[in-house]
Image 1 (cartoon, protein in one colour):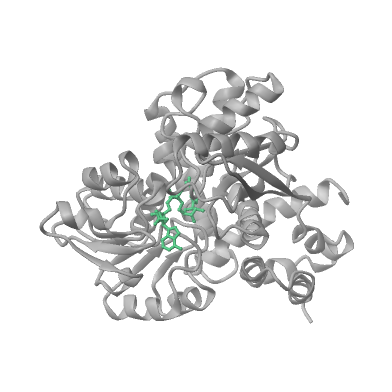
Image 2: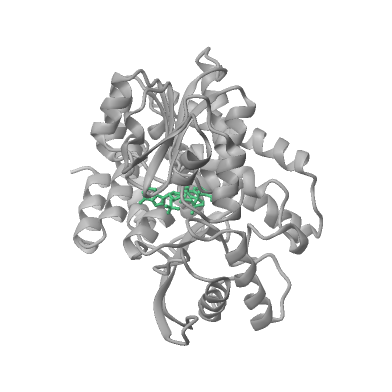
Length: 444
Ligand code: NDP
């Protein structure tokens, strides 16, 4: 049995109730198989893979808070500090009812390789809670965030672990979390990224994941002799990643015709009017169906059928496992040529394999959405230097980072004889740096 297979079986046996984590481990281990077998003896000697799949630390804690009826509610909080071989743990906090240890371990594990790919000194981590900010008042969200940070502050710090936002954690939540950290520690330091501009946030961070996704797409098209201009595009989700992906896509001349949320999707053949989406989602925290009530050319459909619409490019930007095998078959049949993941693991394994086999150009999230964490690392640099760069400076750096990630991914895929397999390329390029740091640092 190969070393990677042996480790995967061990992970499944040890974590039988963590399907998302096992899925993420399998995807990575399968695609680094060739790189591992080329160095098997060296890696086995230091139990490299055994250590790689085990978080350095995983904390889970009680988060009690008062709701507006003065009733005490209790949620569960987590922080998974997965790997610090190349830098302090870095990765978002997710507040969503579906959050559990399996989902955060999958996200933390993926984050290790993504952060490595950025070329910046950041390790992998992830955290969050099963708290649902939807429908809560600002006061309830603040009390929850304060209680969450009252435990979390023991484990984080500018040189130790620097969380950021993710699903359900935007500027408002980061602000409340930061205020409580400062109050508890008396320290004004860059412990969180995604902060607002007046207290240490970086210009360009809000836009970074979505913009970065389109910069990656641009690289893919340039290297394959194509263009983005005029391409009919579907974008799932209507949160932070989706909105700024659409903004940059439209600036590049792409024709985005659909967006969604967890209730349904809108189709607007005249092109999505992003100012309307921003007003619904960013200002009023409403539902995507309101778009069709405001824009005559749009149709709203309840449910998850966004991938049944014809397109040339599909950008899943909502959540994990939202694009399944049948969806990929439909996309291909309808003329889709490119899929780039804005969300983390939005495509199931079967759908990913099918896309690669059928020649759809497929860029995995750990490369395509790395612009967000990369810009978070730029926010950390600015905080450490007590400086702020202009939007243009940050955006230039982001563009260089995305081009560099494309190059590393493509080079690794070529080196291992599978030039069109960006999943393999991204995983191997991310892994090689981690493996060499972990080997050099001894067994720890
Ligand atoms: P947001 O909370 O801002 O938006 C999430 C969007 O996805 C919302 O439109 C939400 O709809 C939708 N959604 C959530 N769950 C589901 C579901 N089960 N089915 C269908 N739609 C769903 O999150 P982000 O935009 O920040 O994150 C989106 C994805 O991108 C996540 O996978 C995240 O991990 C990843 N990511 C985010 C980064 C960032 O910088 N923000 C960086 C890298 C990756 P609704 O409002 O109905 O819940």
